[in-house]
Length: 337
Image (tube, rainbow, N blue to C red; front, side, top):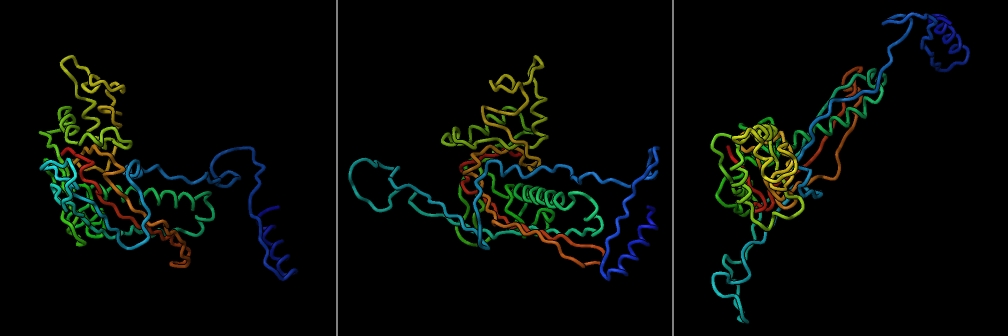
């Protein structure tokens, strides 16, 4: 039966039965030849999207649920014993530690990432797996955005890092202060509080093996053997380290005792995580990530379709809320170029 015959037959059936009739217009070609447009129709393969690099900070950091609009961090500081004197024996003295016992607090707002995606209704119904592909890719795109914001965003200024959120984004690692030793930032609930100092090794021109040694020595020994201690390095630095050779033209890192043969998957026994969101200014971090960085997630991610925002289109709207902060500044060190 031809397409015209199918349509006429469907019209007759609709008039006779007084109800809506679906007409199957699929073609069944008897032509034995092949080629585009010859007696067939377009068959859609399942939709897909190129894989994005998800947020690598989530691979080891402490992740907690957040159900409010803000998240406050509280750190106990100081010593219970008089370490400047002799703590041994049975004397009872109030708060004589060196430094004295105290708390440091800081509070950060939960930030929102949103997206609006218009989709043709016809395409959504024709292409297989398009809706699930869009949702999956959108979730990874959100992960990209939060990873970049966690690395480089400045939440104190509205003009320097607009693409990563600026004053509406996360507190990026870049904006924490450099120092020979780590220290807590100021205590309080203002947005200017909690900007800690992170122990920082300054490289001369590019990151070299000696800089890795110096950075590792800055990390306190109590964090060395904990699960979750790892390097985060930008891919450019990893390539630079792979290319560094000795006088015999052998990879320098191959001679350090690591088993990766200079491929920089481990350095000094700690795994190396490639992190493309780190900036060229701070391309290397070494930390015990479960203690160093905390990520707070609102437990729900909102995704919905809005119909008739434009004739023939639906709009997918998505929202995700997240907050992050360096929690223990003593648990991480970095290299500055």
